Length: 167
Image (cartoon, rainbow, N blue to C red; front, side, top):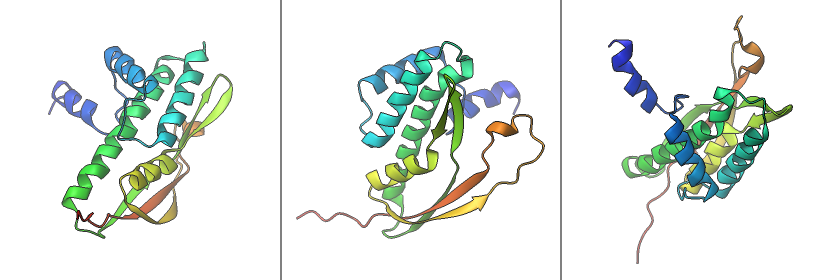
């Protein structure tokens, strides 16, 4: 594939940072009106606070202004993955996700982006059982933007839900 052929595929990947202005606007409006019934309130509340902070930051650049919408799309996509997984996994199947928090400075304030905790809350929202978190370290090499890099990840160990029985 050439770069022109890859672009639509890359844009659809979970975690892609590419987003159009129309997508950003639509996601922000949906977030403001809490139109995401596939996300727990903790995730929506955090995203709303982050969006407010970014909108107040006059020094925020292009990527920073996109961050709340990109994160909303990421969390919503992870929710869809977990929801869909329930239908294909056998009850009590083990699932492991490797995740890491990141951070961002908004208006002079350091924001921790709680990816690990919010994906765990999303998993619980979909009735997955949390077994444990296993910390793993990340090798930091001589990276250009290493001050913002993730220095640790966690493996979240989950168990798929038992089927619900209707009477």
